[in-house]
Amino acid sequence: METMTLLLPLFFIALTYFLSWRRRRNLPPGPFPLPIIGNLLQIGSKPHQSFAQLSKKYGPLMSVQLGSVYTVIASSPEMAKEILQKHGQVFSGRTIAQAAQACGHDQISIGFLPVATTWRDMRKICKEQMFSHHSLESSKELRHEKLQKLLDYAQKCCEAGRAVDIREAAFITTLNLMSATLFSTQATEFDSEATKEFKEVIEGVAVIVGEPNFADYFPILKPFDLQGIKRRANSYFGRLLKLMERYLNERLESRRLNPDAPKKNDFLETLVDIIQADEYKLTTDHVTHLMLDLFVGGSETSATSLEWIMSELVSNPSKLAKVKAELKSVVGEKKVVSESEMARLPYLQAVIKEVLRLHPPGPLLLPRKAGSDQVVNGYLIPKGTQLLFNVWAMGRDPSIWKNPESFEPERFLNQNIDYKGQDFELIPFGSGRRICPGMPLADRIMHMTTATLVHNFDWKLEDGAGDADHKGDDPFGLAIRRATPLRIIPLKP
Image 1 (cartoon, one colour):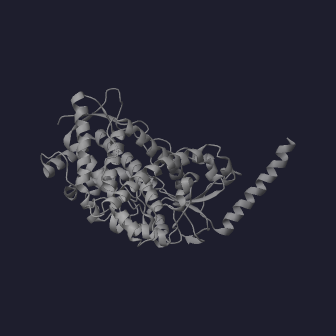
Image 2: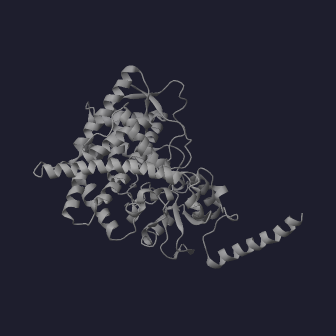
Image 3: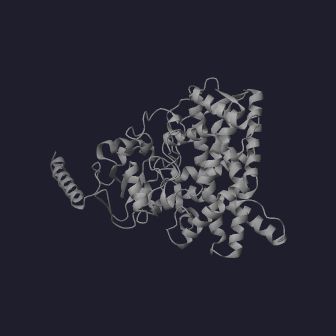
């Protein structure tokens, strides 16, 4: 009783001090944080959903205390635009998780480098050389070959009456499409041991980067590695970097032995040219870490999105029928759709947009960090603040979208809205100077893979698989997957 008598006044003193401090500094509103842990207990395993609920009370620009990390969450297109576009320079920094520091990745990665000369050079290379329209057109035949592999695998499953695990198939196909574009090679084969190993490493990096880590909220814990995240991150990053180094060294050696040999139409050839020309002062480490970023980010998010695309289509047969009819009218009897035909498939494009609205692969985007004090919407955001953007909440906001919980691709047929970073109600790849550099390739992968699966087969759920309309998802990570894998059987149309 005496202890309670002592603690209660201390609590109210702390509460009064905090509230007066928040008012004095005019910080964004938010829930009252508990001592030490802040608001962590209110966030749970699905922070995008928790933040969406809190924003209904505290508004589209609110603040929370995650352990020792002061965090501001933008939950409306207007707030996202003001931060990412109007004040893009101030908020161009990154909050770096402990896992991303593995093998010195944060010191050399395009995703974490400060906005300075090296970062600008790498962004320029990505935009003007690697992911330019000309470059992607040059490598499209390589991707065409890899989609044929997916078609062959699905055909075998069709003949055997066997279900396709869509996430597995999408993941392998994405790796093949990316490896073809990056290295002119096939990374994996379906149902092989090499596939399992490569998938394990890629997913290992993706999972470890997205796993909640107490050391990120309480920096005093970093030296102890209580969850083993630092150790596991170094292992997975190291294994993947060795693989990237092997590809690069083989190409460099091939150049040395055959300097006059014809060049390949892939990204690695471009990067080797840049290294040898010494125009941008990039090292082999820059190249291998860039390849890691592209493989991990591209494969995890693309595979997750493809699973959600097929999940929504199978659970909405009338929408699936519309996609099939459009493909038949444009593509005809061909098996693999040409990338040049994508512009003539507006309903398929609308389906992709609608899935990215409902299921953005990164629901809070990668965190930003305030480089200096900045006033946004009348509130002060102090230097060092972590910023999150709840694109999941924006995609389900009834003030923006009619029937936001319904899968209605038709909403995009008469609206000039895209996900390329200018329409802030739909920014699954981010916006501004930090927008995802691999978006042009991801865009082609999502459209082409979906078109190949839908055009060549009808689909039904595996017996006992339940309902494809599975709205639940896994706990928070680098990308938000379905809670249960989508297993569907391909049928002859």
